[in-house]
Image 1 (tube, rainbow, N blue to C red):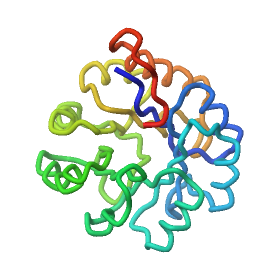
Image 2 (cartoon, rainbow, N blue to C red):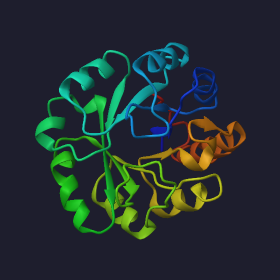
Image 3 (cartoon, rainbow, N blue to C red):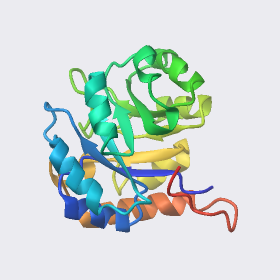
Image 4 (cartoon, helix red, strand yellow):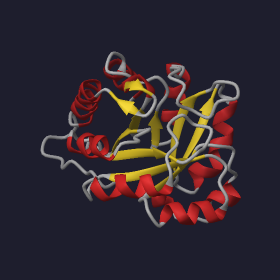
Length: 221
């Protein structure tokens, strides 16, 4: 199993973005949503993009943006993560290789909402549901529910309360396409504990490298 997607999200400092990429993260996440404590400006996003190695993709996370905002972000970053209530009609304006659609899930009924995006081939990120919050809560996702989503579609990224302490167990149990972590790796919102990040990435890479012997690691998927 090649490494496909190991994302560290909520980066606010260029130096941390560069260091985390060098530790092996395939994707670096930045937040462009003013209600988030990890929100940064377009100018700050540019500075992070400039220092991150080219084989590590920068993903801008946004919530219910306008088309204008999406275009501005795509002029800077590699990918957009829609983390709000965006409909397939809006998301399908953009190529699947540049998009992640996030869902906060609390029941099997939520899988039905994902199906139009699955049919178009978009990467799906699943996060724990918390009323009135669009992510970054540290709340752990229900593993059994997450497993059902992963069993129904190949390109599912697991997030929601992932940490160095639980990542190995959750990966072995759920076996997602990729993982995404943020708040459990922080000293405070937007500032990562690099030791925790290193432990997390190491565990994730070890899991994804367990596949066929000699299969190449792909950091650009």
